[in-house]
Length: 166
Image (cartoon, rainbow, N blue to C red; front, top):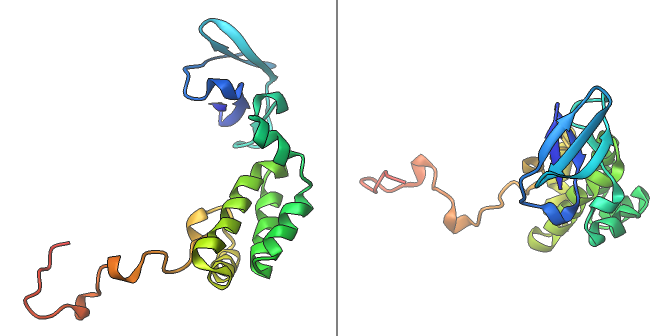
């Protein structure tokens, strides 16, 4: 669990997910309280906005395990899907202050291959890389992730007099 203060994230124990947490800050410290009890204390970050200050013990056990993986492991796994997936994984981790915070994004893209196939996901990653926006998950989805029968037909595809309301 992380709480945002001054456009930066500060971790709190994962057991408090969904709980109300109060934040108190000074020029040098950010503290998080739950029910009046201090549950976390961090040195205040003045780094780039959007960065995260994470204490490993605050993560759930499963997250701690994959947080110990070297970034190369995730990139190698991504490359088994396709070269563009591997390059996207590298770009995501380069964009993060702590590469392990990009693992979840990378693993999500890798899992898309189970649903859409390796070729489509690799193509979607190529498009994301081409526009220079590997952090936007929408660009990683295959071009046509909605089944054909659920898509709205183009205006010219409807028969004359067909109901126009969607």
